[in-house]
Length: 117
Image (cartoon, rainbow, N blue to C red; front, side, top):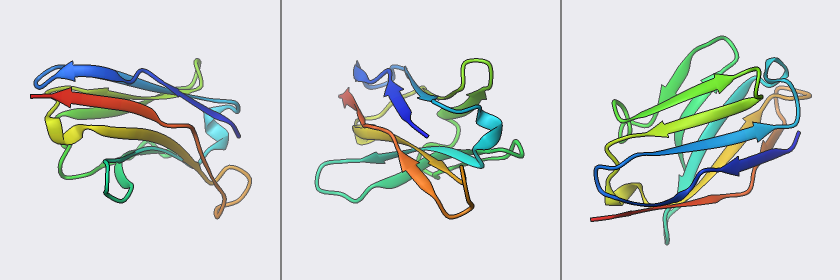
């Protein structure tokens, strides 16, 4: 599966951005879709995931501020980011797990999010 991320940009603290990741396959064929981020000098970390069964999971640092959602018609997984903080700055990547098997995974290209104070 191919993943195409979009929607990054620069915003001041307290602002909002919406990221979108378009998949090349119908979403019902993908077990888990998620967003990860990597800040300079840090390891890539999970931000939020959306499972095919409808459940979602969030990193503690973004709970209550970020919302992940699937749009089956558009074949996208979106990440609405509100009340952004400077520590949310980083390159955001989307990831798909469990497409052809439970063990496979695919990464999309990153999109930069910069939050200034």
